[in-house]
View 1: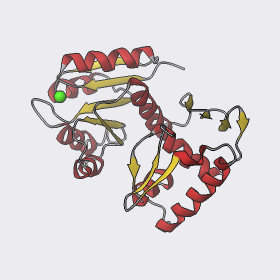
View 2: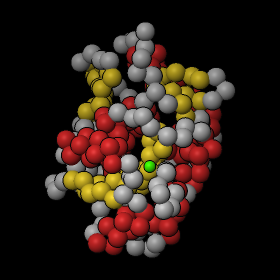
View 3: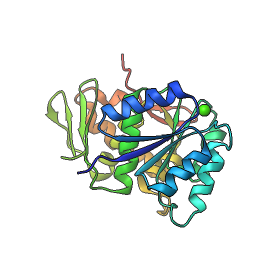
Length: 231
Ligand code: CA
């Protein structure tokens, strides 16, 4: 399969270089733009597979850039991940409502960024090569659709599998029930929020005998988090 092409839109060169380095090492082809205007020129020139856009750009905010791209009938389905130093929930919501497919908060590790890019690309194109994500002794193979705990297979239903895949590609972040519904079931499906709790319980039960149920944490009044740091 040809390397997937990522357009990185970020005005700060050291950050752009750092991202470019991490992505190239992960096998992506990388193109770069220092502002929104140059990014539009890049898009007109050749369509990438995904765009990473920084929230703070000199000429246009990343949010406005995302809105423009999503209004363009030719580019509407181009996946966009926003990068930002702003961790406020309101910004995150604005970013996603502006049409971004995902949202990564600085500082992030190259591994996390690659995992998020792959997750978005897989949603758009299930043919995208998968990968193995692992934390502690728990690993999930997105090609084989297999979960192993300390080398032993974990039996999961399809929803619990999708849930765990989402959690493992978005580690150490809190998601509300509503966000989980939106991201795991998709926005068009009507599912009651309490359904999430049922699947969380099943997921924990499946992980319990290996001791990894503790990674699936309830955050009181907020939602759930997959924690990679379990004592
Ligand atoms: Ca910037």
